Length: 168
Image (tube, rainbow, N blue to C red):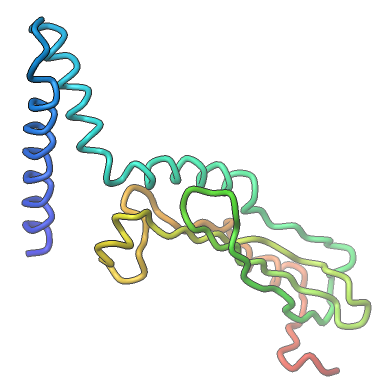
């Protein structure tokens, strides 16, 4: 049922975009120019509600490609007892709201970070927030989550022990 509602909304918005673009170029005398401008305007109007999602998706993918990597100091981490010291930070300077989940584990004896990685989560644009559907306001045009592959495998490979109490 949700799919039919979404399809109906897309058809309705396509019709509105078509009619609005036809109205805006209605006074242009030359047919070729009018139809060309109307086609471009119709596409732009149709995409306008998710334009910030589309542009934000390019920024998000670029951020994920360079930032979602695991950094491991294998010599210092091998066989150590480590504890979690990460946090969540909102990132500024992006079209969409993006949170950086900084995961870091330090050696409890030396307090040196031995394993770390970042996970990124993006929220949707204004349409997602306006509709509040689905819950959590995800982006509509891309997957708003990225993490490095197999980041947990380092714990087994390095034979580290997790300290959950931060006392030892």
